[in-house]
Length: 65
Image 1 (tube, rainbow, N blue to C red):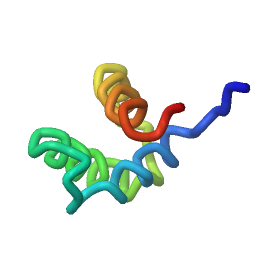
Image 2 (image 1 turned 90 degrees about the vertical axis):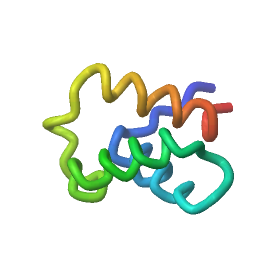
Image 3 (image 1 turned 60 degrees about the vertical axis):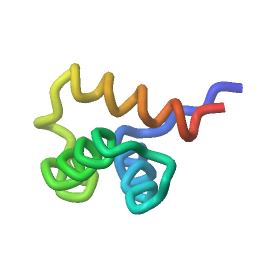
Image 4 (image 1 turned 120 degrees about the vertical axis):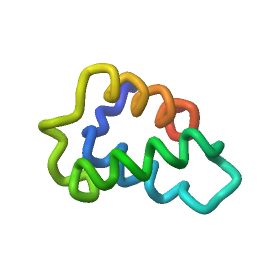
């Protein structure tokens, strides 16, 4: 069964990984930036397709399965 998770939720879940050893320094910086741009995951309208691909990749590494 495939579950659909919104981009907002993915950003919020990734933000929860900050401060852990689960994400590397680059991922930490990227997640922090996206968190700020998207007003804590609430406004994803300005996130580019490339940024969405990166969010999907990082999220998939930690939450898909």
